[in-house]
Image (tube, rainbow, N blue to C red; front, side, top):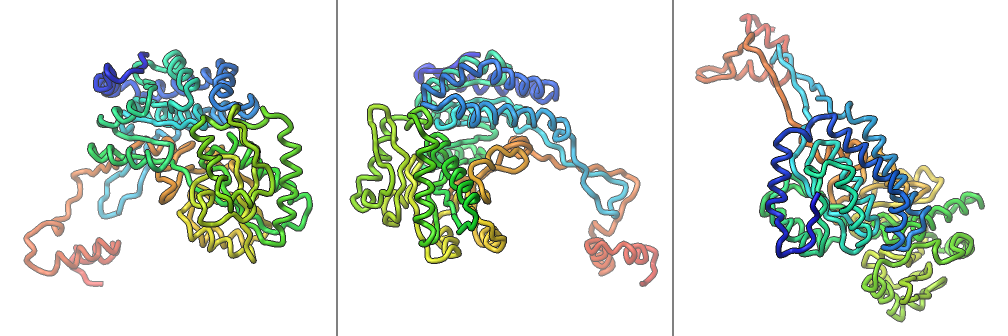
Length: 485
């Protein structure tokens, strides 16, 4: 497969046309082809595991264990799940038909949308490219993947290896600068999936409107974590372990579903902070235990959040920054100003504000006063609080007593709501996102009711239609026979 790296001779129009030729040939629709592509992805991930660890270390400083947990392992698990269920998902689903249409059948047929474009993000450069790609291939698409230029080693890896393991005529990788992505959006696609920030997401939406291209956006947000009082010392420690895992242990907090800030009762805050401090010291004993910031620009953005004097005064742990290694120490802030950038912008890094409330139920009003997040996390044993959070808040997902792990479940959808995005994928939801549910209805010529046609010369036809739309078939039969019920 050819990769495209320079804009002047991009030839993107011919690239898209060639993909449409492949799609129209019908081979991507065959179940055997889809299964072979998914198996190719699994081979890629298993045979190139060490190389994957290397490129993720180059781009983000991720430890090999973190890379396996968050990228390789979760991907192989997900693709195997899709392989196991694909044949079942691809079967047309029977739908009920009204008795008045007898004899008739109705089906919902999942069919491929066509040629799709996937924009992946730099923070999880493999999983955010290959997870949606696996769904698109399962649904029978021809695909272009545009990896993020901010993870250059990962982008080069995808460009070099995808054509070796997949159908190089049906799957293309187009690396390059943002201008390449803009040029791609000048062409017509049957679906576009974009993972990234809201600013670029708006550009994608604007360009997609030109061709009325349907778009799925996976954007970021400020994901809150509500921490209730936990009577058990063990439960409190488990909660802290999982909070750290959902903040600092996942690409140093550079994740759209990472915990952005904590809401906790005033009386519990000192205990929580001390537990966080002691556990951080045990978890991160050497620099390579946590990923680094992706580049200087993001490092400067994060360090800039701490430059506000009122924000820096709220630091109760950490705060050390090393511009040479692009490393930021896990940092905890207690009650920074709510109008400061650290509390109004998505942090996307290893800074964790803790906001105190009088009573934990107040946290729900706090969350609802801000844009709908991609995820809400809550640590509590109170069933009443759990139900209140479910019923009174809106978010892409709600996870109780853990964080981040919902992303790895193939049985539930992943996606945002409102400003955190729209469109859902993972597992069957990926298959459905890249499929069109075609309605198929079949009737025979055996039975014909003339009351459905004009002329409308009396009230009898209206009466018969009333019976039909009320599913009152007894009255319908009696009326047709000239009898009255």
